[in-house]
Length: 108
Image (cartoon, rainbow, N blue to C red; front, side, top):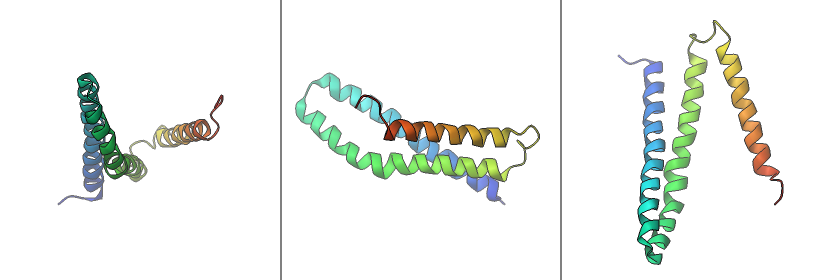
């Protein structure tokens, strides 16, 4: 029978597949649409981004991050060398840098 760690890993991997796969498909479609040179195709493609972004890619990103953190917190494998503490510190630092850059964009 599958335990909590197995279910966390399952959701984490499925969300990562949706996230990375969705971005890959969007990249390929964007290349095809831009090379076609059709204005209507570009308009339809941009219209689909308003659906795919908030309803597929954003939740998948949150699920990957959330379940990944849950997996790290739930396991004891990284406690020996303090990897969990340093990983959380680096993640927090990255979040602060991205937030700072998003809020205070120099030159705009």
